[in-house]
Image (cartoon, rainbow, N blue to C red):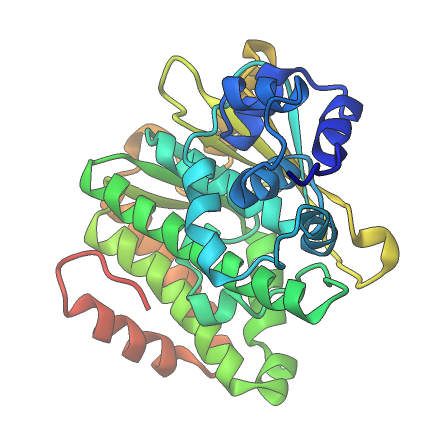
Length: 347
């Protein structure tokens, strides 16, 4: 019988994380990881290797190199369901957990979406859940060194985002509420960058996708104003974050920072994308920032702001900026198309 290397065991031992922590991060059971460490599993499953290494922030290129040591082919489409299934078993408890680059962040977002509950978002524009898939896949992702790794990265990202969207819609059907707080000036800068004159000169196709992104967010507010609340603030928040199950007993904080520029450089291959924590003291800090955001909402006082008026205000704010850039008709035409259905649908 072939004796395989101890690469995975050595990586786990060098991580300085205990079995329970790695199990929560990866979705792989304590029992399985313990058997690995005790060398009772000589040939780990391909999905197990991939999920363990993704939890420890390995690139797809490096994961494929380690898979080869175990006589596995590089990751490809048929491997995605198994990895996603492991990700659904992840748990978020206790310690602060860092997440790097985009693929790990997407794994985190999908697992958090599964928790449900009220979600509060503080950022410079609407939640990425509203971004059309075609636009999402045009983001500046960290480069994988090998073509097969790059192809898998894109396919995996697409399936992850699709799962996030499906979970989001399911949570909407369950009645969970979503609040997003956006600084007026940050939102204006984001729109200028993505639909302004330079953007229109570069690619009207991409501008149309950004239009659909904002239409998705606007339509959610107009169709279900009590459930989807987009607030424009007169203040800039100190940080970007997401609070999952914000009104529950075990809120999860995902701090996403405020990185304004991205470069395809070697040092960006392992960049901190976010950290997650449910420690009460940290949760309180972020909930306090939410209260400051509420005080900074343009429509005052907060108690008198109806959900419908907030939705109308958000729609008008975005429309006014699109009109300034000569795109008012484009926004309203796409909005009319999606508003024809009473159900929540997205481009």
